[in-house]
Image 1 (cartoon, rainbow, N blue to C red):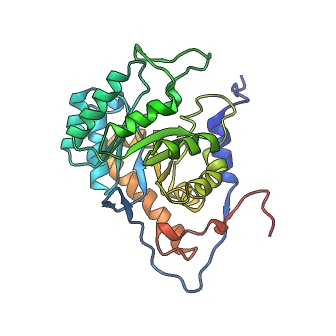
Image 2 (cartoon, rainbow, N blue to C red):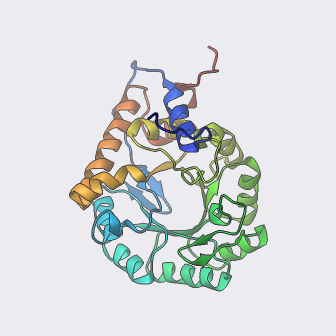
Length: 300
């Protein structure tokens, strides 16, 4: 029987768009590249980060904490999504610089409580996953029996004001929301469709250049969704991202080797990124030329 294909599969569109982007090479005057990332006053070995995953205990015992060990060993940034206070405390106790992403809970008092706890844990930043307000049936979302609601611009401003940590909005996929994030005073955005939250979602890299033009390096721009290899990271950085997050691709190595599997994956992706940078004349991640990327409709 033929495999059923979802005609609106956003993840497939995203993967296909990544694979449609080609890279020109520039070898004369080449230099050894640096993949170092500076973010919120900290330095990291790589712009390849762990996405804001949750509930990885089904992949490996204490999966989120084990992933944090691997991320720290790789010199990368750790992100985490849902999880109780004890889990976040255990993640940060590993020493991984961690960004905590909070769901858009219906009760804002829960959000403020989680922001405060992230501060107490010494998180690098905190933020909100705004694209989890609705489900695919047009109803308010319910995640692990917790009610979600969309957040207004004024509510986001209040979240930003409530913390000394950089506040990040995850789930930006439009110029309109980008302008609103800047208006709210957020300190970072994640260009993402949350693994195809709706069918026919725009591939993040398709809109990334437009978002980068609006942001003008005022705040970091992150990208996730289908970041599976170092060349994916290179393409995202060239088109305007400051760093990228690898998500589901880390699950097999985490399950097989725990922290060491995660470390190896991040190192391998970073090495492939460095190889692409070396072959294109890019001295560091801040100087990756967008003109290196050739889309199918680009003309010489």
